[in-house]
Length: 310
Image (tube, rainbow, N blue to C red; front, side, top):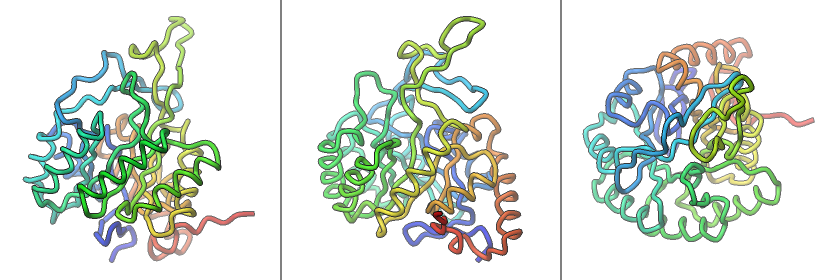
């Protein structure tokens, strides 16, 4: 076992790092680049039942503190990613499949097809798509979330995870965690998706910077790190029988270490991966290893969830 070895659902990973769904994952060529990188695993683009072009361009813009996007779930349809998953070499790296149907029925149809393929792929059910116009996020509708998890547990009938939007109120942490804890097949929680409905303004053009939704979009990068860490730690504390995947604000080994301290078992990279490319994983692994060695840690498990309070 190496210093950076990680584990989720009893599966071993050479590194805790992976892409966030939405980045470097729409096309087979991007997924192959992730497979060839120093990431420990990879995840497919959040897929819908049928292919989607997504929102009009420009729909992603890098900013001084991260990024803003309103992508609208552009993807090639679940059959494209299922075909990739069938051909994937699981001996090289574990593969996650992200499922983000536009209805409960769509999600159940996709989960049924993936289940019947009998693959070792890990499913992450995306409950936090903020960029589909007119569609509320399931995870902000607790009744809908309960219904979705009941149906997914029945249809999938094996361990899976959920991708969550950020919560900002202690009462919402409590209620969301109580729902998740009622569903034992939900084995991991990915926190967080982008913070939705932000607005970035270019003062020279006196304009918004993305086209969809009059410029409103989800922000990632430096903006979201403290919120991401709070959500990781909140669910780590409240869901002791589940694991957490951290996502948000990772651009160096330091942020990876913070996510691990907060309770993350694996850590996803979004905005920084979009800007730097798949070579980022070699740098992040090296920076994380340096921090661990400097502090005298011998494994990630010695760090995970060991955040001190005052």
